[in-house]
Image (cartoon, rainbow, N blue to C red; front, side):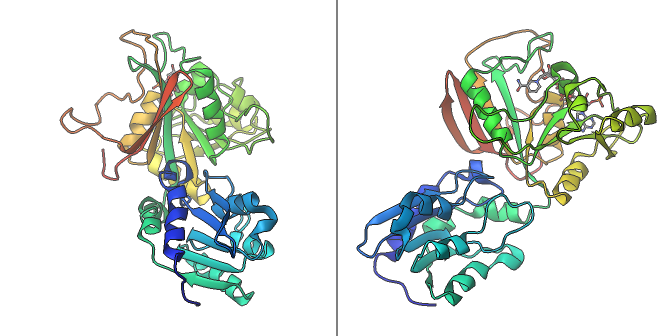
Length: 378
Ligand SMILES: NC(=O)c1ccc[n+]([C@@H]2O[C@H](COP(=O)([O-])OP(=O)(O)OC[C@H]3O[C@@H](n4cnc5c(N)ncnc54)[C@H](OP(=O)(O)O)[C@@H]3O)[C@@H](O)[C@H]2O)c1
């Protein structure tokens, strides 16, 4: 390992600044920043990992530098990855840095990721690139949530809903169309294209008859997530959009132990996969369902309601993050569903479940409020 040079630490801190506050978008991937600096000290490229399923920081920085990456030093907050894994959506970064002709790599944090750890720096060193590992507190500060996620046996699960100012996710008749504005709905389409699975409860499947496949405006065809319905009694209609499109893109329905065999056969005949994941009563064991998804390579899940499923998932401790669109509208109605239902409340008012690292952004006329669910049982 070669030694560091004056200014290296400051450059690493600048790379870390690019990635700060990005873990809402990247988890269970790490937030990573990368700067490319040429021999004269000029920054020729910069990038950060913008979100799960999107290019890594190094790829973004190389893209922005173009041919000026040749002979440059790459400052990366986390060691560049080297291993291409089945299901991984982005090619490994160490070979890309090599191919671009980067002369030196300065990184801060090791990747504890099983057999992948240390492989990138080794590959670069063997190819003649000078590799320096340098402690940088700003880079290390990016990673606590990612480190926790890396040892989590369940997928990174985001509960998403859109609600009115009076806290309704649908009107009193159950209609949820157009709760949020156009920009928010576009954002949801984008979020769907960046997860491995999208999940809804049985009532949402019945009332909204959703398709759940992303439909981004323009751009390349999105990757289609696995569509999952939590349906204890297996009431999903064989004529529903989900059932009738199951042969085009996969649909998994998770049911309880007492789901009628005839309903199962009717759905399976349409190409729907039915998995019995029995929990208490007629319910579905949500941690077991999440473990089943994780075992299939699902790493990020978007739960898109409704309120009963959100409540059950929060209570079961499987939700890691919330993504809430708040529309400046009112609906009223005692019977109109709210985003976290359930017969019993989750907490007392004096001790509510408080989201952490809350990020608030505008989305057209709506607000998007995101935060992490604390890791103690609600
Ligand atoms: N604005 C938004 O963002 C948004 C998003 C989604 C939905 N919505 C609206 O929300 C309403 C539906 O919400 P909802 O709260 O009434 O229903 P829901 O959460 O969609 O579905 C509830 C049903 O899901 C099944 N379920 C949930 N958790 C389960 C578990 N652990 N085990 C087994 N089954 C489980 C149960 O079905 P069984 O009783 O059959 O077992 C339960 O009755 C609709 O009006 C929809 O339009 C709005």
